[in-house]
Amino acid sequence: MQGAVRGLLLNGKNAVLQHVHLGNQFLRPIACARFESTVSARIDEHGFERTTISDILKEKGKGADGSWLWCTVEDTVYDAVKSMTQHNVGALLVVKPEEEKSIAGIITERDYLRKIIVQGRSSKSTKVGDIMTEENKLITVTPDTKVLKAMQLMTDNRIRHIPVIDDKGMKGMVSIGDVVRAVVSEHRDELDRLNAFIQGGY
Image (cartoon, rainbow, N blue to C red; front, side, top):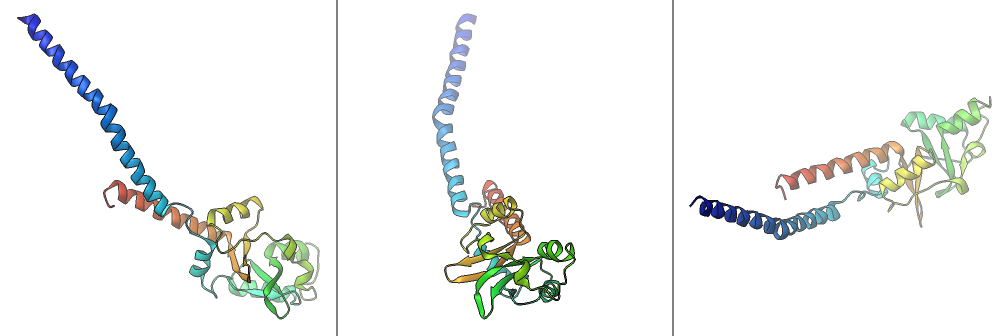
């Protein structure tokens, strides 16, 4: 009698184990596949790197934080630095006289320090065109450039400002601060969406 009971228990245990095994083999992959495909769809829909430079320019506005601030090659360095100080920016786009959409280069605080202060030159008698980084040496982006790509360009080339240009000419300029804020905001939004998904918000 005891042997029969033991056999029944063993058979029952094996049946349960077999059922669990079958559940793991067939049900779990299906569930995982559904979960993974859903998550993938959500990430594709709201994925990282969706923010572009155009989004940053729209957020900044035409008059904010240097988006559209510029000087000409004929302006003095003194006037250019004064404009930077007044608008609390670290760089100005440089355009050719009477051609506001034709970029000639960029002048930055670094140019002023290295080429005026260190060399003992006069900012009031030196023209912007004499110390600016010229157009052929500029690193630029387009409005469609993704913010992470722009960040990589700025980090790799050790620059803090990057002009935005399209086939029609100059569109503005963004700083490393603008790009970092956009990336942080994008990742925060993505984390909020993933948390909402995990908690059943989708």
